[in-house]
Length: 418
Image (cartoon, rainbow, N blue to C red):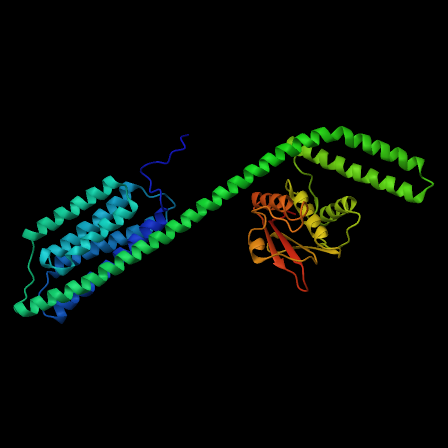
């Protein structure tokens, strides 16, 4: 499939933004024309061709309703469709001007509004086409129109000047409304594109890191097996020496944990589905495995007594352990781990008593690499955790903890079936 965009599509904004703003302008014009006709006919006693003008306004109202219905459809707008909307509005406006004085009508210059809107949104060929149509309508209105029956020339001149002033106000308001809204929408679209490019670059770095991790895991398998075997033999040899024997057993458990991590990595590469188990059992097992890797860290745990089966998504355990490692590195105090179920979502709070972070760092957490300590904590681990949770449809947020420190909240959608 070609990567080039369809040239018939409006590439700047979605249909809802474009046609919605055009619909607002159309409704404003319908209301303005209705009020103006009523004021001239009944307020100033100037006879107006009510039947044909009411028919045009009714058709414009039906067109507005059809546009509102079209906005309910999630389909993109095309250049031709948007051009057709502008051409219909321009034609209806020209007909109304025809029945109300033609080129002598002070509001005739409002026919420039569709051309200005087209210049902002459409390709040049459509803009020039609409400009040519508007120019043609104006030329016809110079010669073919129904004049207003105003008997007093002085009153007619005063009405014309007043109408020109009001026309200027209306034109300025319409142009300001549409152009400012369009610019705001364009800025929002540019921000979305910038965020998408940032996410793509971050994902590329993570993929590169994953490739390096896979290579490292393959090379570490043999040395880890040797370390585990040697640690086991040393633990047996120094069984009568409590201090050395305990260190050897700790080394053996650490090697087993590393081997388990490599086994999980190999299972992910083979796309092996995770084994479902009770949520509380899985959370406790994650904490237990982390304690093996971090025997020096202290942690207080509170998990829900939930026996329902939970199939841990790929990468979630490592994401939790990354946050636990960062919290343990931040301060020597005990790390607080609290898990609960909130509105079909698994929510995990991990809190520490570290120095905390600035508002800028909290806003950028997981999106850029930064660290409070050189070489450790809140750098790549947090970026990996954020990317993993984003891929799983979850989120990661940083807030201040009461009494000092940082609270990291992991939120993951979960709808248990049993």
